[in-house]
Image (cartoon, rainbow over all chains, first blue to last red; front, side, top):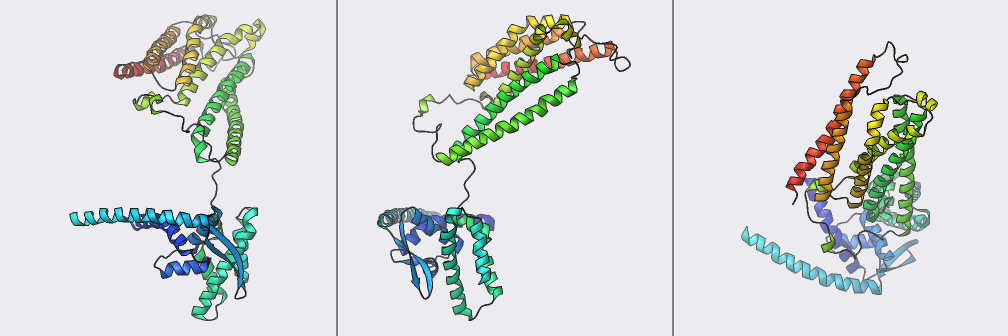
Length: 114
Length: 315
């Protein structure tokens, strides 16, 4: 397997999880940079070119509420989960736990065979 | 900070007008936050460091496309239908153009074969460009109106209505149908159009066939009409069936036989010998025409043989 192939697969794997991670963090209001920093601190490194358009798309889908606020002499757009976003987060969390459990079993049985 | 403003303006230029202000404003806030964080880490920052940060963010066009992904000109759900319409319309345009140019060629005194070829293909390219543009614009418009509508892949289909699984060749290509259709219609025009011409026009026309050959071709008209009907049947079904293959074999055998019979006829051509004096002699041209007819006969013969083999394997 080439490095390019691995990078592509890794990107695809992370892309789906990223929505869940962003929704989970946006229970609290965040602006773009603070969200990215929080994700990085939690071990999810993501470039701004992916994250900022993603949160805009989530807001356009009605999963996030947004508001421009002035702080420290600068305006920033703060995002937070909407009611619809909260429901979505709940459903996606359940789905994630099911998948994680199933995958955990699959990967464990693979390791045992090896 | 001028670099940042230039960068944001470059991104905005790549965005739809309705989203420029909002995305520009948000991008500006995000970049400023990153510059603040950089200043916190390194102290005062210079233009080179700002430029490095902007370069790391990506080319303005890439950033704009991340915010507003480019929409395909034609929606993917319409693509199969679009291609089908395109081939169908181009095929029909070719057949119509063939009729138009062939009648012009037959009635013209100074239109040789080379000019006929140019008029046929050059004119078709003109019409094809117009057809391609019109269809593409129509589908583009449909894609803008109903981006998710899909007429051919709805929920109304049933697995039972799908055609039985067969070999790959069973699906008939549109270009094969239209090639046959164009050939048959070309022959019909060549055979019947001269009958509407006066003796004077006929004498001046570019038609090279002898009256004997024209008579045989006139008697072959029912076969050509059957060929046209067969092509239309193929166009409607788009899948070979046993009956369709069997009739195609018979049709091609008859066409090959007619071509071979014509090849054995003499004279084949009616030439103005004065015009060709010193260039070709009549015998050379007759021989060339006879060889051409034998080669032409090989095509339907090959199709008849191929379809016979297919018919034998057909379940």
